[in-house]
Image (tube, rainbow, N blue to C red; front, side, top):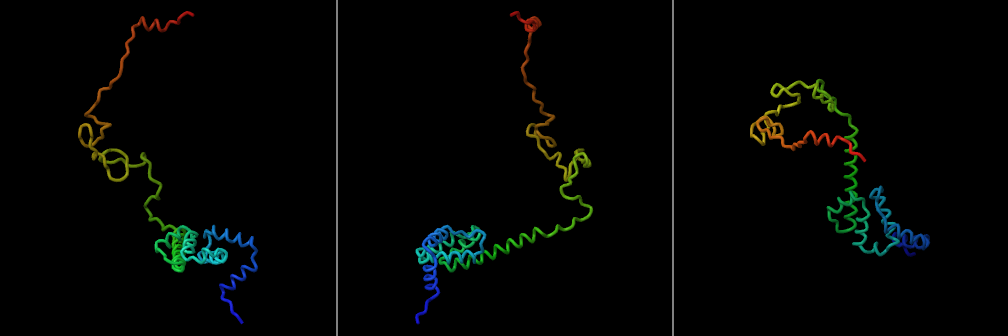
Length: 198
């Protein structure tokens, strides 16, 4: 009595119970296979099933590795490619580890987001409720309302070089106002004002 290996049994089973149309459809599905929302284990099952219908990729180790890597989700593929896998088995093991790391990161991120905020100490105003300028007390140094350390007087004027003011409000440097003056005689004004007959 002859015994069949599992691979031989699968080949005979697929050839006998799948029509040519189904074979063709499964080949196309395999060639465009992407992980998407599947786990790595589900994606591997799809890859292994499709390998029976596309033996050119299944029998070439480099092509099978490339096809597997190309189909992985980008976040997992990046982690697998950083390890520079040389064979299919190594790539699969790295993909499982990358998926587990990603799950841990997502879980810790979601736990951090759901934790309640620690209670605020009494006496401090809540964030976002900064008093308006007219509600603040006046500074003793500059006599202006502001919060925090006074920086008035630390400015240096670019025009005169003195401290305490900026160039746009320099009291020491007044530029003459230039403009144009138009003079018109009274007779010319009256002539302009009179309507012309048509």
